Length: 547
Image (cartoon, rainbow, N blue to C red):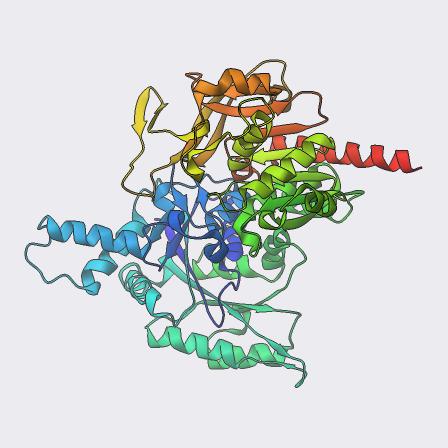
């Protein structure tokens, strides 16, 4: 029977539950076990699709078109296991389903309550859509003690009671802070966090203690004593230089031994750590160094573009290069003089996805600078659309071309689409709801032969993930081509533009999809590999000119 591992967090938020979940899943997969990872989010949104990235971080999109929590991106990057709609649930989805059933009379007149109706729905989610998985790891969002997560924790308590200790495992991730003035690690926050769990009827089986550096055995013994755990079950997880060190740290600290012991797994499959060891060895011996300016408007929180950050990092390792990223607020690029002053020192410029008019002109200014100064440029989703606007505005009569996303315009080169095709079916946009109504998930694109993008992929049919509601207007394709743009990728019906390039430029590519969502440390994305390679070539050329 499938074994369930529940991962909770205490003391502070952002304690690293997502990375721990991903790391343990990776180690189990490398032991030849079949694994699924799921995220239970306590917030009342149906999904994070309408949430501001500056507050919540990026929205990760799955192949099957779900807008999910960014932790699912970590799950995929660490394990290569493709996430699905059924791997992310929120309180909003749970209550929506409960109320739907109530309206249809499915509760047969019962008074609808948190227990058992809401908790039953949570348990149903945890156990559904499984196909002979050996392990299912469930990460519970938020921090123990938050009122929002109480129904989820109660559902987990019930599952432990129903399935038994040897089919369920509770791992609690906490912070053990170091107080420099007292010159000691403080265990009291961890003790209080475990006490909160105990008050809810949950005894954690393993404690993962986040710490700046290893604390002494006396502190471990204190935690063991007051938290009612064996000393071996109190595991230290030191801060790492890179999140990709965590799987090996957990392995070396004995986390897998504790998991196998808890589930009474005597015949253990050997864990093949070579993949991680090789990657980290390469990471520690990088030769080149390049700089990239990411010009966007969600720059106050780096997690707004988490997958993008990681994709650049992966391809940097692939190209044996450190990639230094600077986040540039596009709203500050008010004119060409400021744009040049801010961007002239970077080896490459990237304009990512985004929404709305705010900051758009600053992004267009950055695109223009990259084009004129022959700086390698990558535009993603909104970035591609703005690159096309930048180009067509240089054609006489099209100087005021715009997007209907910005308001009414006489030249709607970018406009909202009402319907599109997928798998020979017509899909329509829900004009009444913002959430879940975009072109979402994996779509096929056909690449034009003998173009840069075809050379990058080395094939002419690709599948990439999308998340947008505006497209390049088909009625302006001829004018766009006259402006110097090469349209090098289309939807299978040739109605939607997927890729654009610029002639006579070292490297200038815009894509309607989000390639960063499919990049992993062991399989970096070809677009980013090519982009970073172009930066290295550009920098070396510049250095040779100086010499």
